[in-house]
Length: 314
Image 1: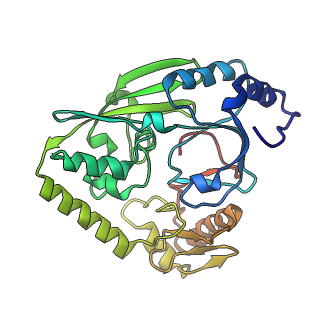
Image 2 (image 1 turned 120 degrees about the vertical axis):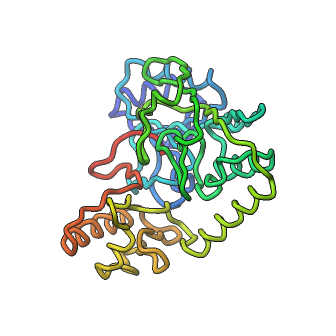
């Protein structure tokens, strides 16, 4: 471990001692997100199996330490000041995929684009949309990720998670999640370690063609570079991107952050830019759109370390 731990926080220091060499101190987080900007984690662990996750739960027992579950970081903005608690990110041991007929079991750390391509190659359909979501299975369950006319709720049948508060491993049917649009019942200290999907038989060539079309559409309509996809959820009956553009904000720049000129609901961060600049631009867009249209945009991107930030999965 390197870097000083803030000894003013007794609980954080106690957790660092309990986790020992498994924990990294002042670990950079920006590179672990698709914005590629942001601060550090006071403590960071990357467990490779459930036993290691349960050891983290035991270390947290009785302590008041904020926890952030980090997936692929594709829907997350972490402030330049970082996260003052423990960040948990699943290691490679949670990247296993198994298939039996139409049933697919995927570890929480499995990349969604990888899962989409593997299931199509196996002659299954239902997860083609996932090729366009640069997140993980765990993150998809936590936020009901989706796109191109489908979502996680449409194909998930059960999930397995470790409760870091109780130190228990649980598995439940999908109904317990009470899925809604970009929302689930996964709590801030639930680590989704696996999901089970029930897919339909399909034709590999048709599935590959569908994936190619999704990739083509996204390249044509959405910007690349350092961003986290759609910043705001679409209000009922309208488009956040349209509202931003109609308010004259497309292309607006604040410091190292800019509203994309390709799609107004995307914000691009400069290389080595500032997460706080992105945060300021998000707040400005909300205020300006509300003033121009009367519509208050709600963020889809989770903002950590800002005034209204909290813990959870990203």
